[in-house]
Image 1 (cartoon, rainbow, N blue to C red):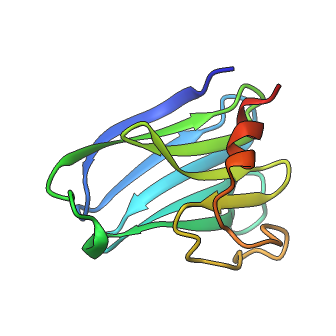
Image 2 (cartoon, rainbow, N blue to C red):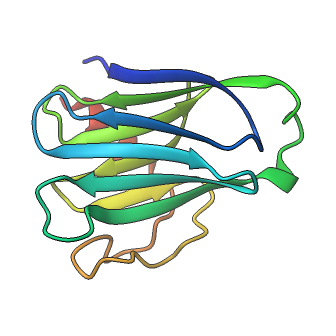
Image 3 (tube, helix red, strand yellow):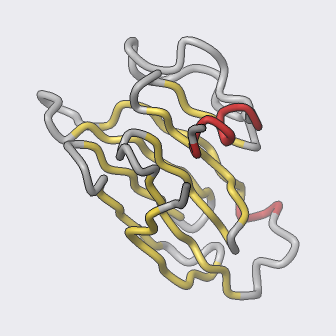
Length: 137
């Protein structure tokens, strides 16, 4: 299976930017944000009353990026079923949301608890199994 990339931007780490990518099949969306100090990845349910943000993953701290002076390509890609989304930076997966399981995974594992009671009952640590499940059988 393939990843359907819905957004791609060249970014400079530490330069504020927002990259948005909606699921091609439904009400879900994902947003990458670099606020100048930190990179985050957000899971959004656009049908949710009030705040659509369901979960947030820490991607990086700008001060800890060694090659931050080089441009990077940020991509948001969705699974074929439109229920899983991955954040790729220079084609390497850094964060993943599974909307069906309501679970987020990131390589930094920094934010251990989801801001939503309905999401990420387990910690946000990375799982290669989650990435494998992204592609299905």
